[in-house]
Length: 603
Image (tube, rainbow, N blue to C red; front, side, top):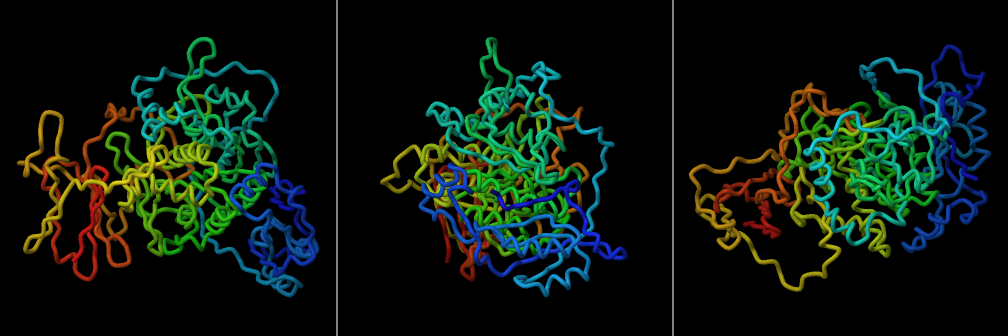
C-alpha cells in the first residue's frame, strides 16, 4: 500500500478544533525517526522500479523509502486543520494549521521541527471564465482533424525539431524509447485521449498510469492543455497518410511508456503545487519511471533570485533525491531570458537536474526568451539546449509554440533513446554522457550550456587522435587575437579573407546585463503557461537547411570557472575576436570553440 497521501480540496476535512478566529496557514513538519515501521519493497515497488534499481546497482530500498510512522501522522492529523501531504522521502508532513496548533505540534513526540511555508502574494493571471470542466466518457469519438491545413513551413519545423537531435539516425537504429518509462509532470493533458497525434500511444496502452495530485483523482485530462503540448514533443505525430499510415514524429520517444501526473494549477503558482510535485515524484519512483520531464519552472511568484541555488526549493531537493534513486530528471530552464528575472527557475537549479535551454530554429543559437544561468551559487546552468520554437499538439489541433517547456521534452526523448541503447548506464552516467555528447563540449556558456546533445558520441568509438586545432591564439602587445586557420576557413569554392570589410554581427547570445531588464509585455509566458503564437503574428521565416553558418563561441572565465563574458559570432573572416590582455590578469582564462575544437588561453 502506498503510504503517501495528497488530499485535494474535496477530500480534505477541516478539524472542528481549529480556532475560528485564526486563518490556518501552511506548515511543514519534519519528523525525527521511522523506528519500528514495516516495509516490503517487493510489494511496494512496481517490477519496473525494482529492475531499475537492480540495473543501476542500487539497494532494493533505503531509509527514505520507508513509510512515515502512522502514530506520528495520526497525532498530527488530530491537532491540525488539514493534512495535505505525507512524504516518505523527507519523513515529513505538510498541513494547514493555526499558529496555536503549530505551537502544540512542536511539543508532540517525534516532531523534530515545525516551519511555516514562506508566503509571497501570487497574482492570478487574467483569463476568460472557465466553462464547466468536461468529464471523461466512454463513447467513441470521431478522429479530430486539424482546424487549418499545415503549411510546408510547419512540416519543415516539425522535421527540423527532431532532425536537430539526430531523429532520423535514431529511428534508423530502432531507437524510439522502447522499454523506457517517462513520467510527465504538468498542468493538465486536456484533449490528449482523442487527439489523432496520440492515436498509436493510446491504442498501444502506453499510458500506464495517471494521477491528479491536486484533486486526488485519476483524471488528468482536465485543467489545461500544456501537458498535451509537452507530450506532443515526446510522443506526438503529424497526420498520417491513407490506410492509417502513421505520420512523422514530433518527438523522439513515441514508443516509450508514460506516467502522466497533474501537479500544476492553471493560472497561479502556489506552494501546494510543490507538494504535488513531491507526491508525484515519489509515485513515479514507485511505479518505475526512468525519466521525469518537468516543463515547469518556479521563479518570482514564490522565490527570490538568491534562492535559485538548488537547495532552497522543495522540488529542487526532491529532484536531487530522485536522481540518487536512479531517475533522470529533465527540466525546462525557464522563459525569463528577456524579462527582469532573467535567470533559470527551480527545479532546473538543482545540481542533478538536466536543465534545458532554448535555441532559435532560424539561427541555431540561444533564443531570446530562454532563461540564463548560472545558479545563485554560480554553478553552470543550463546543461543542454534544443529548439525553443516547435510545432506541437494543442487540445484539438497543431500549433507553433514557443518556450523551453518544449525544449525539455525533446531532450528527454533523446535521453530515452540513448538509455534504450545503453541500459547499463546509471542515471548520473547518462547525465554526464549527454553533456559530453553535446556539440559544444567542453565549451560552455550560460546561454547554450554545452549545446545540443548528439548521437555520434554514443554511436562512434572514442577518438584515438587529438582534434586538429581550427584556430590560433595570437598575442599582441595589448590584445590576444583569435585567428581561424586557413584549412578551417574553407567554404565551398572560396576561402575567407583574413579581414573582411565589414565584420559579422555578434549574434544575440551575450551575457545578460547585471541590471534588471525592463519587463517585456510581448515576452514568452513563464514555463508551464505558454500559449500558441497569436493569430496574425509574423510567420516563421524559412528555416535553414540543415547546416547553420559557422559560429565561433568564446568566453572569459575567472579562476573559479565563473564566466565574466561570452559571445557567439557568425564567422565571416578569419580574424574573429580580439580580447584585451588586461582582462586575462588574475588567472582568468579565455576559452574558444570553433568547428568541434575547443582551445584555452591564459597568462
